[in-house]
Length: 143
Picture 1 (cartoon, helix red, strand yellow):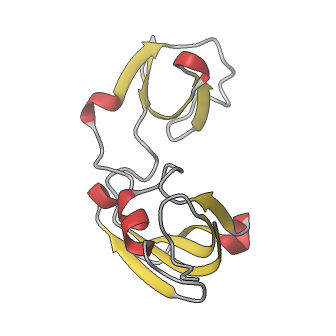
Picture 2 (cartoon, rainbow, N blue to C red):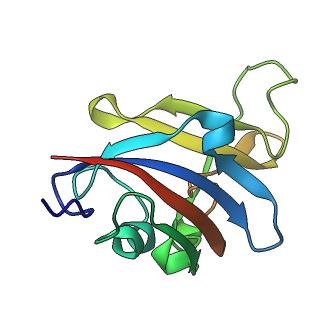
Picture 3 (cartoon, helix red, strand yellow):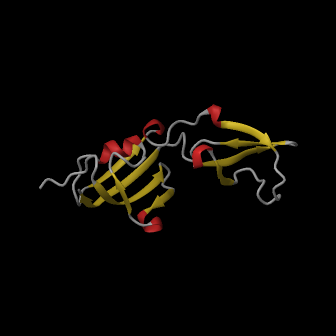
């Protein structure tokens, strides 16, 4: 039977995700192998396309432009909100956190700027606008 990555199959990957300067962002060594259902799990489009059709044991290096990875940085994703009464330790430029969104979703943010009465939040994906490299080895494929 042909065991290639295709929609609906459960896939297990060994991977590393890095920036083009070599900075490792995530890896199977750090977070464990990644198991997902191809075509049903949200993932960068360039990654999904780049591994489609691979078989167990195949290895691939994908150098992805922002539009094929986590998207371009969207200037409309910056929002000013009233400065919260949170502790000063949380109110630092670069601080990343999560907050509840609509319909039970979670919205990730980074503090972009702190003003006298407001805080500017960046709601872009942390890797938006970045060229990234995925090094992937296919470990297992199952119907």
